[in-house]
Amino acid sequence: MTRFRVVGISFDHMHMGDLLRQVHDHPEAAIAGIFDPDPARMAGAAAAFSIPPERVFTDLDACLAERPDLAILCSTTADHARLTEAIAARGINVLVEKPFAASLADADRMIAACAAAGVRLAVNWPLAWYPTHNMARRLIVEGMIGEVCEIHFHDGNRGPLWHLADKVAVTRDEVERQKPGSWWYRAAAGGGALLDYLGYGATLGTWFMGGEAPTHVTSTTWGAPGLEVDEQSVTVLRYARGLSVMQTRWGTFTDPWVTQPQPRCGFVITGTEGTIASWDYDDHVTVQTRARPEAHAVPAPPLAAPDRGAVEHVLHAFAGGGALHGPLDPAIARTGQRIVDTAAASARAGRELPLVG
Image 1 (cartoon, helix red, strand yellow):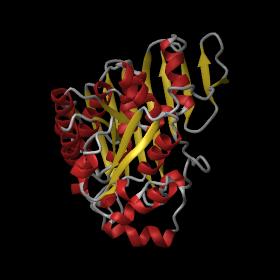
Image 2: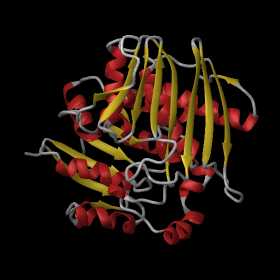
Image 3: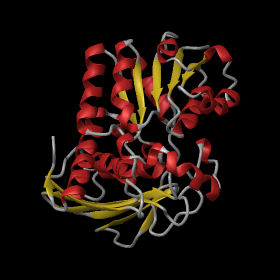
């Protein structure tokens, strides 16, 4: 039975294929249409999910006229605000793939547009569905490590062009061929490793911190000669109780979903009564407490329905008026965006700045 109709808007971000797969596999959802100005970019998804030609659109208005319950947005980051406004104006709920927005001003446009139209907005961060990070949050809420004081985050991958949907690998020659024309490497489109990955650490870090925002941010970036965007960033967040450090990297030695690189991808969270190491793709977190100071594993079991992934969670929450899973909540994601904006400004200015917004 089809209860939910979902459309996919723009194939700029390779995660569109992953999210459409979640729709395809949902027993009560159907792909009502997909849109992109370039038909070639939709061909793989159309074939993989048996989407008929009449549901493949190069005109946005025609796709939105299918009257979906939810639109999944995977455009360039710079287009998130414009397209969210267009979708919300049609009375359609929006699930936007990370990062939230190209700027805090754009994020506020998106929040305002959805509020004015009476629709809901969610921001998907794939790390939000990793069992480890959910177990870390659970242990924090239960008080196992006391009050969180520091968060250490390192994450990234070999680069945004090294894989397609479903993590299909791309050859080095193909990466180099695509790089000159790719939006990921254009500043005006919202490219760069800082904007791609710092939002993960900033948003999940805010979740781990119970919504608390830092007071000041310091950041520095690096990019290979000839590039207009960064490939690496190091950001320090100043809180009342201490400093947190967040690092992003395009160019890790290996992709973490294949083989964890060194340094590992994920979080180390320090509290007043203990610590948690929460690595991407593990099946456990590693914990220290005052009562048991030796590092020991705590299992992180798979998530259960309806919270195993973005699509089933959002459809369930939106249909029942329920709350969104922490990092998907625009209020949490907005604090993450404040951190990202301040970090970018700090890198340009070369000094510590007070948190914007």
